[in-house]
Image (cartoon, rainbow, N blue to C red):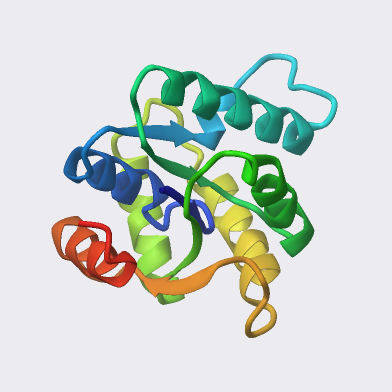
Length: 168
């Protein structure tokens, strides 16, 4: 199984991915932001990310891992489709989820996480999340994943998502 978690900054993608990884047997969490965190960045980050994720999943599968949780932001259906096409040769059920949350709660979470950081990036993050939310939620049935409200605590979200996947 490959679970793709899509959503704007600060919505809880990494938190949910980590909680899922801890609950699912033989599971690897792949954080898209960490995979492409290079200086200078690759010329085409999406191309690099998708190639690297495909390679990493094949590598981990060869070592006995069967389940994967990938978290990142895919702004367009074409980008998410490209990832799914690149992973289609891997024998796995691929499910994509677009995480949703009311704006004020999303902003509150950004504020909370900012309190644990050395640099004050709150203004940048607030601006970024507004742009990302506009791109992701501009139209219904956008092709960016099945909507999943992440207002509940991580433990409840894991239970609900696993039930939805019938994967436990």
